[in-house]
Amino acid sequence: MASTLYNVAILSNLPVIERHPHSMPVPYVPYGQDATVTTGVADIRFKNDRPTPILIWAQGVDNRLYVAFYGQEPAPAVEWHHEVLEKYSTRVVYRHNPSLPKGTEKVVVQGMDGALVKTWITIKNGDGTTIVKQLGVDSYKPLPTVVERHKA
Image (cartoon, rainbow, N blue to C red; front, side):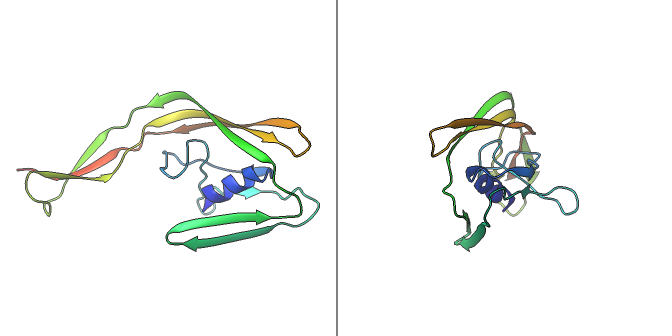
């Protein structure tokens, strides 16, 4: 939910007041486009700086989350950009699972490399002007691949 709200706020060109990336990459958005919340510690906050209200619509359908912001002004054309500054290789962690047939393995978590990523956006306004906004640099630890196996 937090990553989806963050992406819609950026695509609507609303100022993001607070955003925290995950500590490891997530498979559902590119590096630099995620956000996470932790009760009392980290939140996602954005501001409606428009002169009129916005409506925030959200709906879950078949395990997918849809979110939209509706307002008086059309959203600008926004393009995300990412530059991987460093990459950190993932590793494999093995766990014993006696319920598997002997000699078999099963990947239960597909790992992802970690990275140091710089993110910015290009905003093309309806009047033809273009603005570049730097969104910062995020660091992601590698997400290990977890393999269960039953040794023969």
